[in-house]
Length: 185
Image (tube, rainbow, N blue to C red; front, side, top):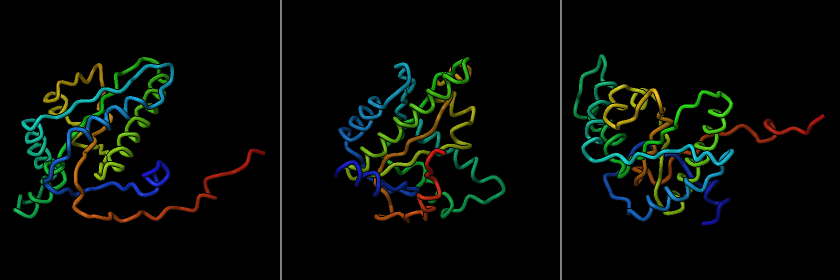
């Protein structure tokens, strides 16, 4: 698969089959992420591969967060399991905090490039990924269990990697490119 084809056909998966992803795929994705461009060679990305014990703890935390005011029915628990527990791999991307706001912004841009590299490599290898943020990624218990110091580092997101439940996730409708491009005056 060439780069253009990978970019045009990559889709985010939200539900996963409980199937493994070869270690070589994860290694390639991490190496590709580390090759992302970055300003001033700061190499701002840190990757935390989450163990099975912590994956289960994150699943329990997700159940707690998502079930507020809801009954934990078997169907509800299975849906959360397919989102949180089924993906074969979870890589947490962490950014060291910086005093300088502009430098922090440059680092975040570089980390975004690293995550895109990961997503494209995973896709080219026949698997899927999802970059997620939100309640689970910002919860104090998540920082504690992953040994991420919130004073020194910030979790940028979770990168779920696995076999998608849907073979062809729906393609989002995009606005025409012409609405986003102009010539300078």
